[in-house]
Amino acid sequence: MDIQSFLYPKNEVAYLTTSSTMKDALDKLEACQYTAIPILDANGLYFGTLSEGDLLWKMKATPGLTFETMHDIPLAAIKKRMKIECVAIGADLDHMLTLAADQNFVPVVDDNRVFLGIIRRKDIIEYYTRNITD
Image 1 (cartoon, one colour):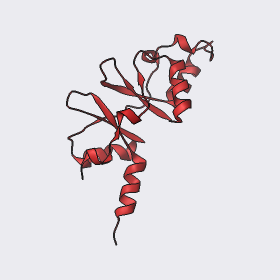
Image 2: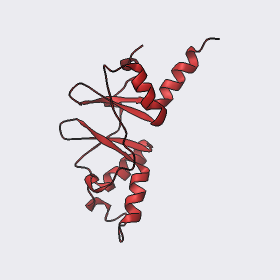
Image 3: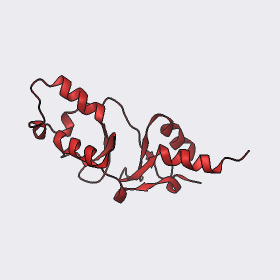
Image 4: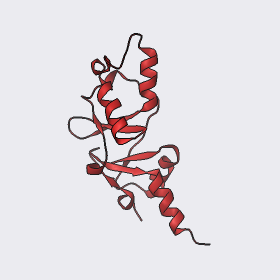
């Protein structure tokens, strides 16, 4: 068993780009029903993860911000409250499991940090639940 076995590929994952705005993020999170979403740069490199909480804290910290003006706020202006770590596709499975204990998903990258997809904690739990033997 390796990391590749759990990979939910990029072409099936909703994500944002660094050029996205706060409005883009809110719309995408609503459409895909995620609570957090990966952010990629223009070259497809993993940049970070944005959460619903990050958006709420930005709203609280920005007097006068409304749904109508969110398109003026670039993602770079939104502080990320949690650092969601990624894992290399060739990393040890134990490293990925350690990250998954604290994150709903683990972003997976290649050796050049190009985003390949995610590993969902849900899939890990389902796998181990199916394969537990007494």
